[in-house]
Image (tube, rainbow, N blue to C red; front, side):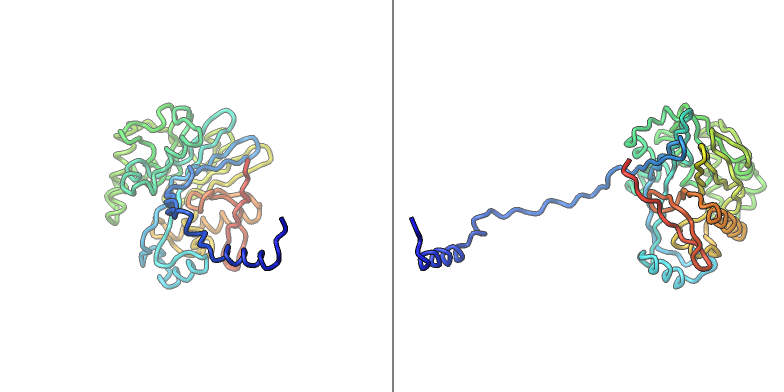
Length: 328
């Protein structure tokens, strides 16, 4: 049947006037998801596989003394320049699990189960994210510690107080081990934070691990292809590492910098957690100049996840160029 033009227009007008939307039942929006996917990331250094395992991130109000030798307004200006919110600080934590082909090696252990409970899961995620990555803590051969701050060592023990890596040898810097076990140094602890560190470290290593650790020296390979590098300043025994496999190298910087948006851009700024700020600055400049010159990839414990890239000169400071994400 053919429709006349008048009939077609009349029908279209009637259709437009019909409240079609009201015939569709209203549905509420889906609830917002509140969790990320498990945070782990893998890449290769020669034949070695590096697994970056997030321990989470801690956000807290920016203290006037977070940077000892810069005013809070200067720090806020640098945060805003880096597209970060002012008046607050977020610190990321990224321990490593390295599969050398012959050994499974953990470098630093995160904040631990106590911090996980205290922060409602914001930090202390290393164990759960490692399991999500398919890595069984029972299969870890070696745990290598860079220094004795809680965000690096408290994951050595599980929630029940037993060793989190029951079959692993625990390696610690000889200089760090000597310092924290020195009664004279403990007597000289200048503030409550340092006194608390001495107490917690002695409880963890002497009671929890029963002193079953192996001290290591700087300048030597302590695991296959893993060289211990002196990086004192942040603590007396603070250690970084160079992972080598074939012609590839990776610098594992531990705490050469804290938040790189602040301390790479301003290498002369002193962090409140550095025990010898001047020495920490000298170490930072020496290491970053080397990384620039050698174009060596760097893995940073406190870099934003997945916490690796390259260092380039940027004016009087440095800038971290994140490595491209790889889906495989």
